[in-house]
Amino acid sequence: MSINGILNINKPAGKTSVWVVSLVRRYSGERHVGHVGTLDPLAVGVLPICLGQAARMSAFILAEHKTYLAEIELGISTETDDSEGKITQVGDPSHITLEQIEKLLPHFTGLILQRPPMYSALKHEGKRLYHLARAGIEVERDEREVEVFRIELLQWQPPRFTIAVECGKGTYIRSLAHDIGHRLGCGAHLKGLVRTSCGPFNIRDSITIHQLEDAFENDYWQDLLYPMDMVLENYTAAIVDTEQERAIRNGRPLSLSSVSSGEHCRAYSLDGRFLALLRFLPEGGVWQPEKVFPD
Image 1 (tube, rainbow, N blue to C red):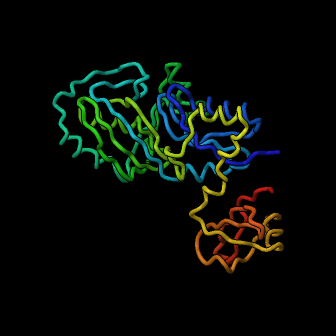
Image 2: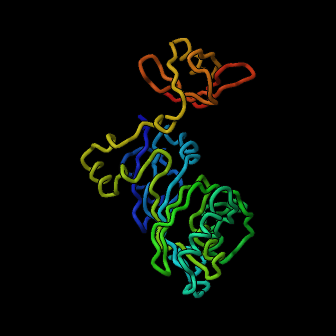
Image 3: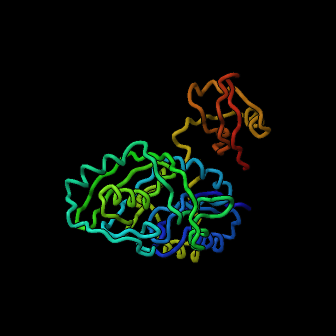
């Protein structure tokens, strides 16, 4: 029987996101396991792990805001834009002041353009960029528009400073560190990174790998699973009767007098089972099943 739900795991430093997925798959016995939002091995923090049908919620989690604590070191540029890469350039940050950084950071908020790093999981002609980078191959990467909602300077200890960042999907904090260093004229790289939230999942409620292993060994790990519909809590919930449930199961559109607005809504059975995500079709005034979940 498939196990459906989401684990909020605090990924440790030195481990890949794929390593965490493999660990959960091995312990749980569930074949369909995936992570949401890759964290580099250097980074720590919130890594949602989706099991079973919950994997179909990944896109909704990715679309939500994410928050980070990022430590940036001025004066050193690396090939990976973080502390794991080979040093490519050394600059002099001694003239950089707190006032300069405070004045610069607002320029990196709002809709900004970023060039994805070569050492990333993006694909070029079917191959991961980091595979090409390790082979010494660099390819052109178009700049992409991303959105940064907030940057707050938390600490300044020259030549390092720490910022809190709230951003949308596709934002590379390593690229942000690189671009800040470029604008200051001395270079920079990402020294450390903590993801403090990813959509509805917060680091305060996350579990460590040690806690996860203990939960598996003592057979209470399923108590740590979040229901997959929690990702959709911003959408209106609709209770449907037996006939409407049958229509949803068969993929047929239906009318819902109880829902008056919104592009999507959650559908539940009379006994509280999560049935589907529905999408509103304004041309017909009906709700079309978009993602239907088995009992």
